[in-house]
Amino acid sequence: MSTSVRVQHADFDLSQEIAQLRAGNPKVGAVVGFVGTVRDMNEGLDVAAMELEHYPGMTEKSIEAIVEQARGRWPLSGALVIHRVGPLLPQEQIVLVAVSSAHRGEAFAACEFIIDYLKTEAPFWKKEDTPEGARWVDARDSDETALDKWATKASTI
Image 1 (cartoon, rainbow, N blue to C red):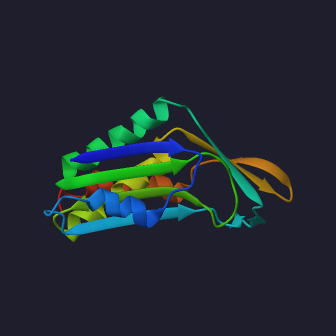
Image 2: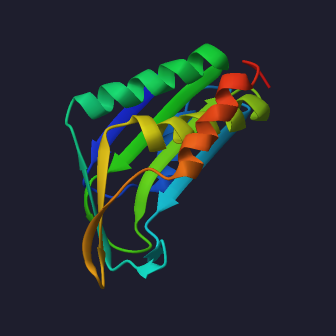
């Protein structure tokens, strides 16, 4: 299985990344991707910009461990996680999680699993610029709740 984890300042080209994930593997029957973008509002306040910080080296290892957990649950052909850091504006892409497998059920489940764990377990810090000033953003309760379903779900779909 090919795995690629990148933390970067630069934007990414979704179609190019997906094409590369599935290239040269005729066993791939499904590719599922998730792209997260910057919203212009959060918790009732306008967001003019966001800045994402990370712990270099530790962040990549954390994401790689999440992908390994997904591989242990579902038969994947490939996985790609790109997470941007630095200053970002509303509508800009933040994260891409894409997985390939022989069947769609495994691909959908693995993609959702990876993003659910990424939101809570990977060491990123998010600061938003609002009319009331800059504020650090914590993980939401809904992000923590999303993890609970994986503790009870069967390892295959």
